[in-house]
Picture 1 (cartoon, rainbow, N blue to C red):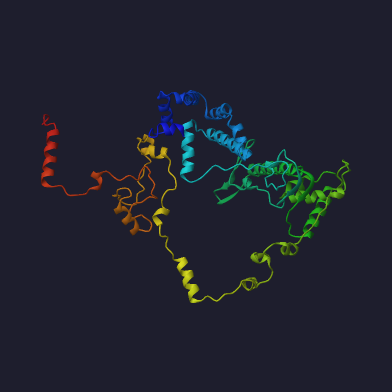
Picture 2 (cartoon, helix red, strand yellow):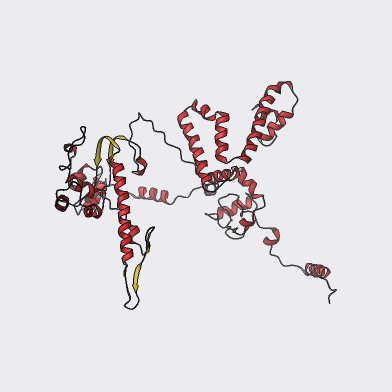
Length: 453
């Protein structure tokens, strides 16, 4: 504030600081000393920005200004620090995408602001808070929780990679179908079937490793949830698994490879739980409990089951739903009021098309000469010819004539590279007089070289 009071009409704040340093006044000695140190530091940072990458520059600013420590003492200091760290991580991601330099990053931030967007705020979770975390199995690696719910274990494995026309393999090459041109037939080749078997084995091996991670995340209790068609089908699969394995402790390999979901592996494993000797003292096989819950038992527990008609067996669910809604007779006055609400017109439609924000840097670039590579992609997005002076009385009247503003050539009332009015010689389509045509003719004849004739 002291700087602006001394030089109120100095333009930018940086220019104001420079002018204050030039004032010779005893009362400004302390302020000038502080400003001098700041300007020297700013010059040092500007030189540093030319030598190092943006990530190093940001972290250097954090350390030399102690800004992380400063925000920690403010209200919601933890969240402020998390935002600064998230900003630093966003800079790392930005430079990882082959974008370099402070100018490019500032342009990236301006584009985000131009679209009324913002960087996502990080969520702070402390260890002593009680909360539910929903995450993938990959994200849970290295973490442990008191209670774990493993959901959708009945979901089928994704083996779409083996269903394509060609199946690649690092070891065997490319597996393709065999085309019998003579008989107009197409069928899988032996090499393709071999590669498909190899690929299925790799995919299911990865699924088994993920299942191991999921089963080892709990500290106290693990609840595994999955869907099956019927309890009899599960018992049949378990009996088949026991019969195919015999007296061995390891499940038959063909059964393991033929499983289509995590739940298939888990249900078959429960059939062999009594064969394995007890290997730990804090866990017994009796602690494994298999519970079946039918759809009829689940539906009454759901809230607002009337809004879920597909869960009801009653064929007259629509009529039952209508009975739960209060019926009111619609009078002419109520109908007219509802119609007025539906057909209402906003009185300030032009204001709703105004850009809420436009940075100074964006306006500055409009007056710069564009790069050659940008000229080839330049397109005029104006709907028709634009011949209006910005925010003139005539423009407002013409804008009011059109609800969308298209006739007036208004493009969200935002200055962009292609919203300036066309040059006068393009806009004016008037017929030339005979005197003007004669002047043009004489001028052309003067410029021509007739010595070669």
